[in-house]
Image: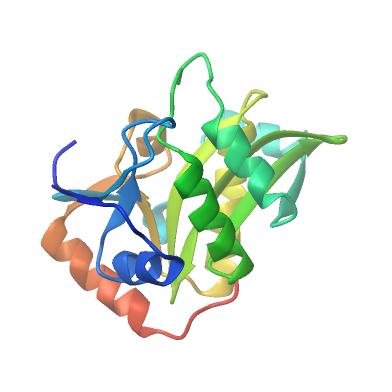
Length: 204
């Protein structure tokens, strides 16, 4: 993981928002590690909202409406899903401190989630932080094929409608690159972030 990394034992929700506003975000080495550290990548992952790609097969799946998509009805359950081990992700960085901080941000109106439901079962979702006209994606999970992908599609649609200008993914992965994610240098990202933060906080 390239970029600035410094330990921070005492992070408050207000400090966390200030950190996001200058390009920092927290992580833990593991779910069992109580300590957090700040990360500031030299290359930042973003998804340009005007250049979001959806494959034909995924578009076809979405038209079938396999899931009931909801927003902000089960934030802590989504965090639980993101923190749970999965075949492709045996461990995660979401520790108890992260859970507490983001639950508080949610109650403050600065952390949000998109949920995929199958009946009464939460089968996928994602969560992140909103500030100004920026949305910082944190994590996603899927218990059914394409559930998290469909949540991402709905997230982008919602951000566009609400006037957001920046979707930060922190890092890029091959999975996210399929949707149009790109890496931008830190200097360019800082300018994009400054413009997004300078606008009034948008409703998610």
